Length: 315
Image 1 (cartoon, rainbow, N blue to C red):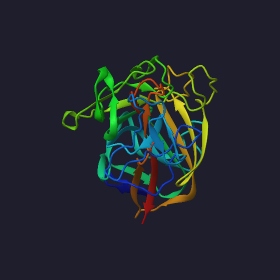
Image 2 (image 1 turned 120 degrees about the vertical axis):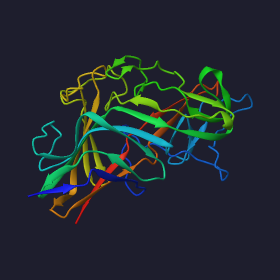
Image 3 (image 1 turned 180 degrees about the vertical axis):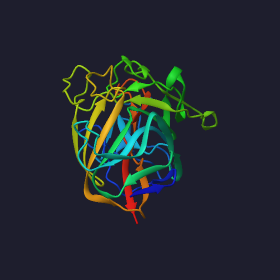
């Protein structure tokens, strides 16, 4: 017997989950003053090669992690499975979302909302794995006010900065033709700065084109640049990049989607009375990236780090 569920899943911003990022090193949270200003240090000329403070490392750097105002993500599949999908075998899965065109949702910080998906059914049973297939083009809409003036796109300057150019940029900061269009050149500024009254953030996008290594030329493996992320909030995660036809990606130029497999610490048990709640964590899911040139105070872009998903199945 199948359990039929409503056509919407409640989305919550959950603050208690472990963050997973595409880098092997932990990102560091941005430091804000008591007045709510991003702590940006500059020298007497208004320049710095390490302008922001990383709270995790207790030192200044050219990058820190923040919680974006909005985070846009496109889902193709979200399912429960009785076997691992890390090898791209999805035959054991039952789907909450299964949409070839994708379901795009914007998560707004500090709020809950509903993702518009059709009615779905899940067979009663025990599921040991969770599958998520999403676009590797992730959107960030964000703004902040800093303690010192910064220089953004088109030489705009001021203490308030906001995402102003759609991009997309590439995770490796390289320029190439992706399934989502041409990515921007290394160092292209996607953020404007000025007076707070001028702030009008738009979605700025980043394509996650590599999971291992730092450049597209770094070796690719047969299973889509596979990466074992290890422990996440509800199990252990294995991740690969896929093409638009859902086969394993072989290069930055054909990587279009992210296949995320979670081996659940506690399997989900689905009955005819089950309800489903999907929590999404966006805390520290944006990398605020500055120039590392000591001769300027440029801010470059908002890089997208992946959010953490946590599905709860209850009676």
